[in-house]
Image (cartoon, rainbow, N blue to C red; front, top):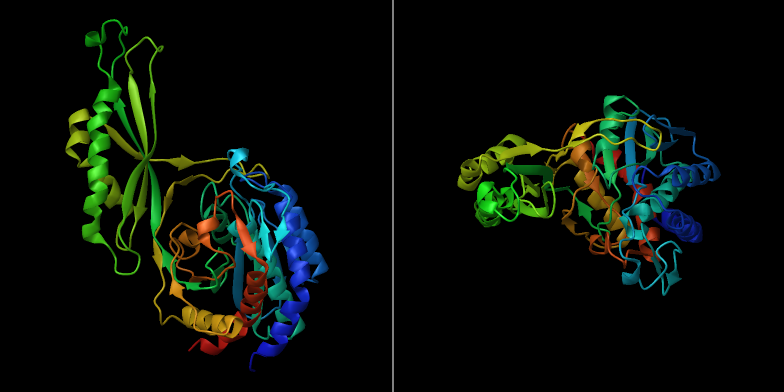
Length: 404
């Protein structure tokens, strides 16, 4: 059965005003991590209006909607949580208005990534209405807590057997390119111990901040050395210090502990154990007797569920000749009318769990551009919603045709 591209295009155009309205409604609902319940209910209403065959909310609060009932299970994933606004004075527009101007929708979550949800719901609706789901269950997943802890939602979905997909399409912004992976990451803490003394006589104590100073310098040097293990596609790993803090009995006392937060990005081939050993082997760390630890995440979701995990988010990478990638390229060609860019994200996504932890074939295709993510110019072009919906409608059939 061929995919009727002209009919898909016609319906995508027809449903564009509905996608715009849906996206603007979601933007208007603040939905930072652990506070997604109101936007989940808005998504439920849209799934019901689109006549999805099944709608459910799992124990973590992820909402899942299904069309079709075939053997092959495909998931289109969009996380519903957003980061906060930050300093309101940096915004030129109301972050929660969903302003539409000159063909672009602005506001917190427009590109990262409620635009992906709007387009995937209508892509699935189009696929159902055109009878393109023979042999396929197509699920749209509105997942939670991704901004706080990438992939935790899919750890829950897969471990608790909420859904077992054969392939996942991450709808994070790709500027309508087909993405096949990204670097992993870790959140690591390094701590030095000192001994407090009165600030008037610092020689009586051991200042933990001074013990930390050479570690900071050596981590900066380590980042440069990581070039030696760069991957041809994903690039080099990286490390940077994103926070530093200290403790003391008062501001008139020697610091008795110091802690830095290390953001470590992992390229292909780098591991949790290797990254930790690399830091522990630094001469400054050994001299200071510092401790190196991977942080934990154990925060309740909006349902109250706590699902603890380590803050380790594995690298994942799909080969260019994998059927999911090839089907994605075909669907993108049909949607945008030209050969798509096959690339990678600079940031991290739920793919760290679906593919990185569980080995589920995963690709990315989404509206907007990641350069706007987490910025006061968060945005999504209306045209991208239309074209992305065309991709999502076409992908299931093309994936089946591409499978060996």
